Length: 134
Image 1 (cartoon, rainbow, N blue to C red):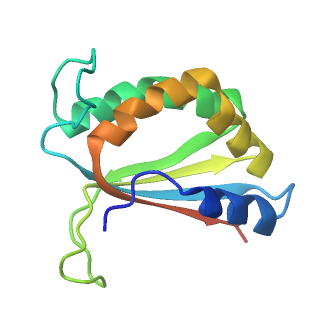
Image 2: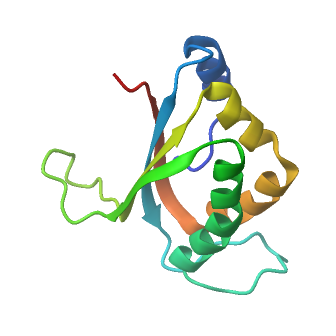
C-alpha cells in the first residue's frame, strides 16, 4: 500500500517519542508517478511526477532553510541491493533539521501546506524516516 502523507498517529508518535532538542535527519525515499495525479478540477497544469515534485521543492527548500534545516543529500537511486523485489525508489533525499520543533513548524507553515498538493500529486509511494545522528 502506498504511503504518501503521514497519518495523525504517526505524527503523534513522532512528536512524543523523539527528543526535543536533538538534531534530526529525515530520510526520504521517493517513487514518482509517471504523470502527476492532481485532484479533479485542480488549477495545476498536467505534468510528470518529477515535475510536480520540483514544484513542491521550490517552496519546500525555502521552508527547510527557513527553519534552519539543510538538504544533506539528494541522489538518484540506481539499484537496491537489499530490499524486497517489488520495492523500487527513484530518489533518496536526506534533510537535516536542528530539532523536531523546526520540522513541525515547517509542517504547520501555510505556504508549505499549500505546496504539499504538488508532493501528493507527484508521488506513487514514499517513506519518511526520522533518525538521530550519532
